Image 1 (cartoon, rainbow, N blue to C red):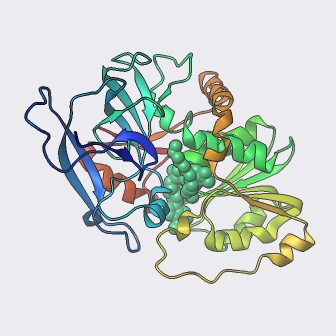
Image 2 (tube, rainbow, N blue to C red; image 1 turned 90 degrees about the vertical axis):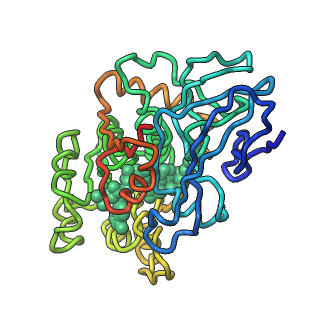
Image 3 (tube, helix red, strand yellow; image 1 turned 180 degrees about the horizontal axis):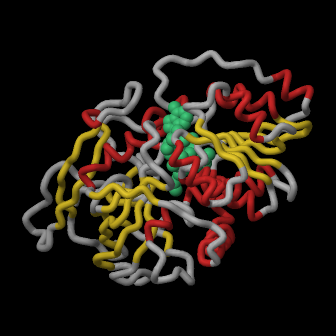
Length: 356
Ligand SMILES: NC(=O)C1=CN([C@@H]2O[C@H](COP(=O)(O)OP(=O)(O)OC[C@H]3O[C@@H](n4cnc5c(N)ncnc54)[C@H](OP(=O)(O)O)[C@@H]3O)[C@@H](O)[C@H]2O)C=CC1
Ligand SMILES: CCCCCCC/C=C/C=O
């Protein structure tokens, strides 16, 4: 038997082998997967990825066969591929998958789970890292939301805002990439928490969307004459909290408009992920020292010991209509590269999802 743990994705998932299995296997399942053919150089290109087709072995005791239904494409995959993947590895990622067959008594065929299976249509798991949808998941709520607002991006917003920023009612919160998976949840949780919310995003349609979900102020950073002025106009008194998804120039400008004792959550730096040469930035020490700011980076998985509590809260807000979600759905597994590349062109409104 050719098998192994997929170290690349850090998961207990049987690796897809790039050749056929012995003829003794009765029910062969053909799996498709996207592999990193060539490390990205600048903006990812479809030709950097390769679609491979393989056949999975029969299940051993304790194993499950899963079929992806919805897959997530996320900006983190770009820096992750650079740092942690080698050419030929299957792209890292999560999906909502259906259990097709189970030889694991803890799971029943037909159940939907969130898995870290990478960009694959089918895969085999020992069940260790599979997550059931939170209890009380309404039939009417698309299961894909478990990859967005009630999933990793929602958790990012929840912990970043409540635990790192520690927002208080009456404060003013700034978030960029505000119409995306994380940003749209940040703004809405901040509103639930009694804050004033300002969002920056890359199109007028997205600005209108942000207003429709309760943002107090929103602007299109691509068309404003001056970012500094746009930030000042949206909140003349400055910002208590800045949830930074973008980095780069935006952050360099925004840091100067923080209030005394402001908090900055460094969640991501999507504007920098495709850089081919290191950028020279502004020096941040002056505003940090003289306004006594706190600036903290965080990775959501560090908070996963509390994910049950947070997913419950996020689902409750969604069900109550306090937390709206939007999905940008790309149809077809073969279009995963296109959906991924689209993230860096601002094509998505809300969570970018691929439906197999
Ligand atoms: N620290 C953590 O644990 C986690 C961090 N993250 C980070 O959060 C951020 C948002 O992720 P997510 O919500 O999933 O993604 P989004 O759904 O927000 O999609 C990415 C968006 O980023 C914006 N964008 C793309 N390129 C640029 C650019 N050059 N300059 C400015 N904006 C750009 C685009 O929106 P627009 O049209 O507005 O430009 C695009 O739609 C990312 O930085 C990501 O890495 C995400 C999850 C966990
Ligand atoms: C369960 C999926 C793990 C996602 C981790 C995301 C960390 C993000 C970092 C920056 O974008």
